Image 1 (cartoon, helix red, strand yellow):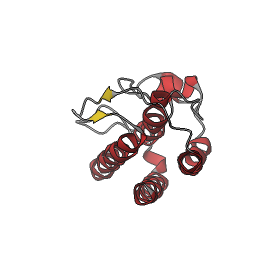
Image 2 (image 1 turned 60 degrees about the vertical axis):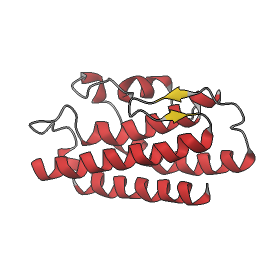
Image 3 (image 1 turned 180 degrees about the vertical axis):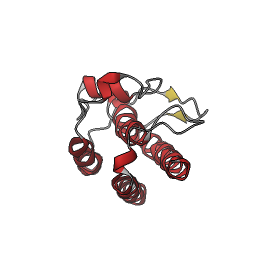
Length: 151
């Protein structure tokens, strides 16, 4: 899993770079899209926490309020997104990966509630979750890169 966690960290660094480069446009929803840069960035953090922590019956690092803003099915058109602190999201982006790395090494992910993703992938353990999460975050990084071209 070392390689998968390292790849996840690199993807998060790429998400941060993309977000920082275009931060002034973070709330714009380009034509043809349903969300914006801020939502995609924060959604990656929320999904990783749900897939890795919640589904393994461990406490998530992020708050339930943060989850409610950026979980699957939410929309950035919700005015409650405005008070979200940009620095908080950037800090969480790497801190949650450092924590995942440490918690994985400590073996806290013993139980896992099997889950079939909307992508059609069955997750049966933490290794499945980390690997799938990398796919998910790469997808959202791609969305962000495409959005930037539409701005």
